[in-house]
Image (cartoon, rainbow, N blue to C red; front, side):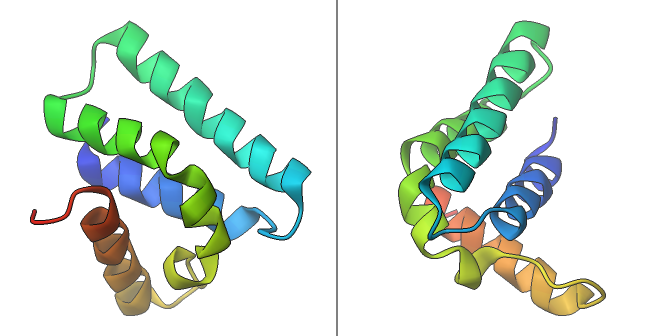
Length: 95
């Protein structure tokens, strides 16, 4: 999984969850954790992507609380790309 694919996947999770519903947030974090475990077991991630994944897992509650800043909007490709870039800056400041 590449960093771009991961950011797109994470954005999709943040778009689907309801930040005010603890169960929804827990389901999103569970999906993220399962994806990280699968990526690690497969050995098909690079160090940059692995680091971003671990930071996303560690900061998931913060990301969920601020999902409006990161979630995608159907058909708005430019805004979605900017929001994925914002996600990357939160997960890996200085990159």
